[in-house]
Length: 294
Ligand code: SF4
Image (cartoon, rainbow, N blue to C red; front, top):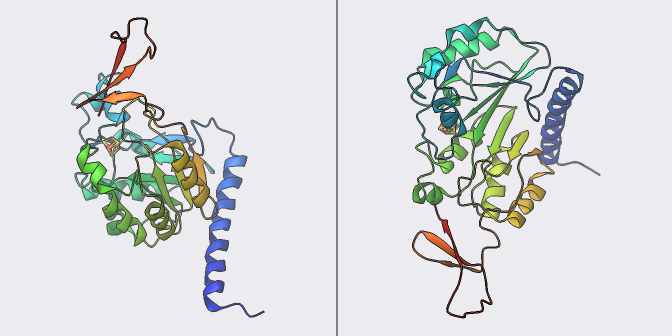
């Protein structure tokens, strides 16, 4: 049976993805250091701070509370180049998450800082470096100088821009702008984080991921009780089921949406009122619980 040109091309791309995954998995299995979570073995923060103001940002909260006496956070979560980080050494097989305490590719980061980081990771060709941003359009500026051991990642929590606007989720570029930037990015090792997941349109979101074609997708619900507009669990599981054949899915916190099963609640303007005692002795008396909405 003749194989069409299109099929050949698809097979070639699939094979390429498998080889990249094989390389990563071999390194992960052979690397004996402590793993913080999942595939990331280490974080490295040459640049910290961020001005995207995501309402669920744990890094800002961490910097402004527990870490507030550290030199790099004394002035808050403002972007900062940490020169002392350019003396660290990385080992073969480590999977390093770069700048998890900030957004290295935010428009507020000077180009020279990014060039300095890229130039430094080039000294460690046997280490994997993971970048994650909410402004992937900026990857295009540096695409010709990234080393091949860099994973270029973007957080895309939903396909719905209107959720972003309605609930003031973040000042970062809208999800649809990140999708376009990642879709047009010519890079083998793309990574998407759907975390914290926000409600989405199943068909459209699947199509976005197929078009971006990432090697790895992280999916997880919010861990910090931010009461975000979340999808129901069944819908998230459907998304995972559909994405699994083409990407390596790493499941983080997978649970019911915080408001799932609250159908017996009565909604007022910004509050849910729950009838705790549905059959009170005195029918005019109900015990109530108040839950503040977004
Ligand atoms: S982009 Fe990341 S670091 Fe910046 S505010 Fe949002 S969650 Fe925090």
